Length: 144
Image (cartoon, rainbow, N blue to C red):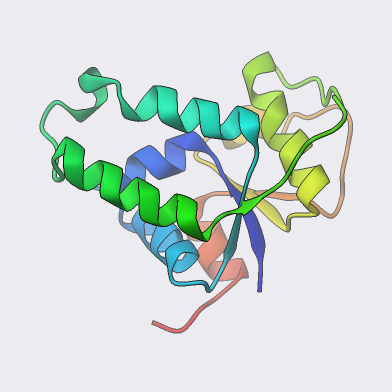
């Protein structure tokens, strides 16, 4: 079973229209087919982004429903403490915590829509892949 770090953009896409692959990856985490890992920085980012009303102007889910889905997702995540600060030197400093979490958790992949920035890591960790939701579903297939 694959251990994955779900970037915030994947979780938001799962809660919006048009995020079919992102929704499937999130659902597979909730259903226990993937092990989602979570750390303090990623949780803080999730919580910050999910309360931004400008992202959810015409939502499929109400705020209450989004919170219920988010709580269900969090309930299935494995908490991982990150006791060091590797500086993978990503173009966006705010993304470094994703690689740090992935390394600390010995995750198989970071699932993100931000391939451009996350694949430009200077400090390489060959066992940690950076995949789109579609690539994740292909690389780590699960029953339909």
